[in-house]
Image (cartoon, rainbow, N blue to C red; front, side, top):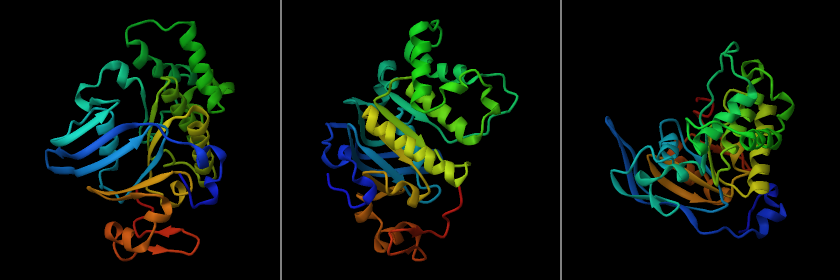
Length: 276
């Protein structure tokens, strides 16, 4: 797959062939009690792909992740994950999907260590009531090593900075040994420098662990250089393709309105850009 951005010149990206589709939306619609959340979505996400989901607030980005987790079966159409209908996902399938939800502030006095937080990721694999063993502890430690947080293993989670906590939450998802990693606004609430560090970490995990990544972000400029494809969402799927194909004023204006600005360097300025 060819990529237009300099950030995509890694050998892994330029010559890596993705596997078969792991996630298949076919004319899938999802309803909330007050009305449609997503309508008529047709989208395939391949094994090993890095897909970025962009769109304004309330456009259904989080709903798309909830659907992939098997929490919202479609009201119309179909959604298949690992070749089984989403509402029929078994525990072993769910354990293969790591999820980093939108960040919430952690109570600084909440009595949980970094190690304990990551071990929670093993519970979905071994079952909530089974005791964890030495192998689980080793897996948790390796997950912390993967995100550069092994030295903080015994620290209270609440004492860490926002960026460090986010690395721990990513490690918790990695401890499941997932095939798919879903991330919902992983850079919200942390400073700009740390945002780029977290995104570089996700990019490295994608390459080193050959994860299939679906990442929701309101920050188009942060995700555009890293994702292999972008999906533009506003209840419907307006467009899907490379950053160069999607980040055009005529396409973005359909979703964000005519006030969107694009610069020669490919940067996008959106009127509601800073709202979460």
